[in-house]
Amino acid sequence: MRPLAVLVPVLAACAPQVETNAIMLRPPAARTRGVEVYVQGQAPQRAFYELGLVQAEAFGSEPNPEEMVKALTRRGAELGCEALLRVQIDVGYTRAHAVGVCVRWLEAAPPGEAPRPPPTFEPPDRRVPKFQETPAPRPVEPPPSSISPGTGV
Image (cartoon, rainbow, N blue to C red; front, side):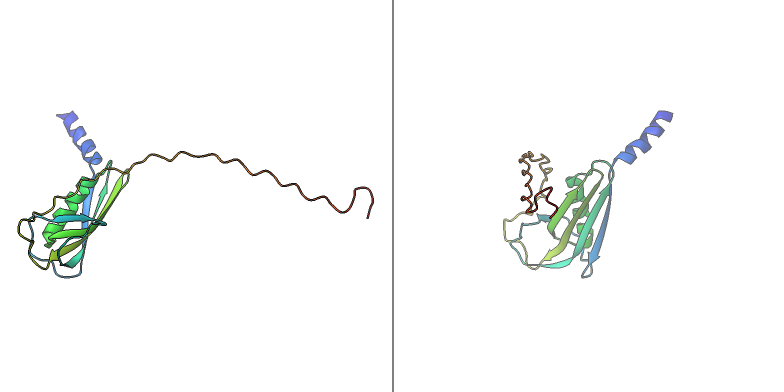
């Protein structure tokens, strides 16, 4: 029983801890079931109004973007968001940060349009570009002096 008690705190220390915050521009709306996610650069085809900003931060070893999106959508649903727009996610080695604009639609979705599933994120390409060596400039020689050595003038 003793080894298990030691193992649980160690595993808990490795799992990322996610905290969420919100800055509301309007009072929260009724809780929603599904929250659509639009990353920076994507635009919805419907009119909307903004409720506020939702942010998530994760601390711990190896935080990942999927956990950040889940935390944003969970918090967004609590606040009544129908979608999160302009979502940005920054992931480091021990910290991750995500933020999105919480919105509600002004009109209903067109018939047959299903909510979009949250996007999947791929880690950025971390290859370092090859360094190209350029030759060093040649030193410039000073112009000859108009005073010749040994003349004293």
